[in-house]
Structures are given as C-alpha cells and as structure tokens.
Length: 41
Image 1 (cartoon, rainbow, N blue to C red):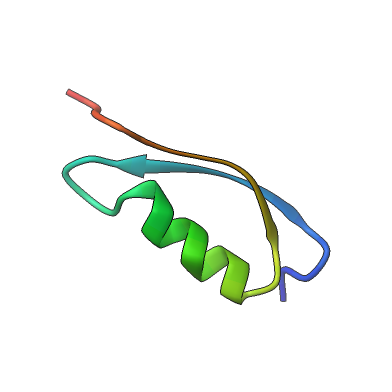
Image 2 (spheres, rainbow, N blue to C red):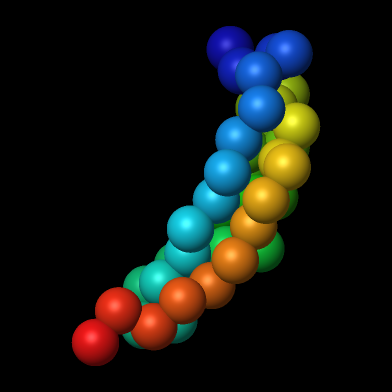
C-alpha cells in the first residue's frame, strides 16, 4: 500500500515511540526518511 512512498515519523514518548511506528511503516513498503520520539507536554 505504501510502496515507493517516503515517510516522516513523529512518535510520542508516552505513547508509541518513533522506531516502533517506523518498523510498521517499513513493513508496509515505505521508506522512512526521518524518525523521532518527542515529549508533548
């Protein structure tokens, strides 16, 4: 579904971290060009 797409990932420290989202997105076929985990307080 996401094959050939590029993705920027913003994870949440108290929710789902960036690397976990990136792993799912890569499995779906996208290329992760940026991934980070932030604290939104």
